[in-house]
Image (cartoon, rainbow over all chains, first blue to last red; front, side, top):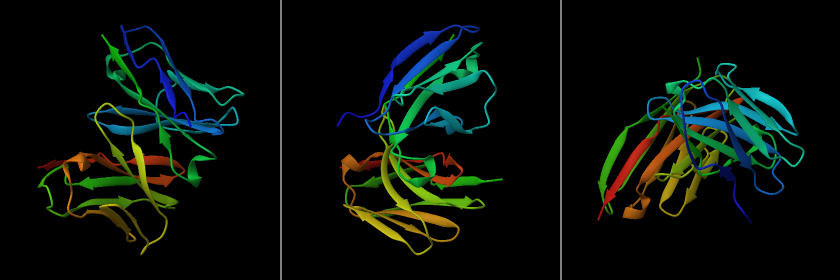
Length: 114
Length: 107
């Protein structure tokens, strides 16, 4: 069974640009959640999507957005990039809502903002 | 405010030297406590879920326990391949992760 796939794995952007990251969950998983991981703040919850609807959102500015498609694949977008957005962005999937079980993480997309 | 604190930040053990990692939490409405392992350059890998005080789960050399205020991850006779960062997370609507404990096991 294929795991969670995130693309791209690495990317470099400059301040003010925007970026879109993609996540393909494990087949049959309907919940996708996104996290930002930095050395200083650790793993922080961004948002959760289930059945194409955002179910929960973390404490991040509106520059961070996401969506989920009918096949459960998800994308997240960060607009007007800032230096502090440099981080590893992790996507996780689970069979049902976030509060019912374990998460299966992808290997992440490492974003560097120059 | 909901908080998750892990200690120690880093732990160096000799192979075979047992120890424990701590995860203390102050949350309202805990729905579950999770332990994950993260290797460098990888996403976290699920280890255990604990739901109620007194619950214990075991997997190979790892054993997780839960009280009303904290959880412990006990590592018995660790091997070098157990070296990783161990993350604890609590479910309070969203998932709140601790900063992790970076474990190094020397042969």
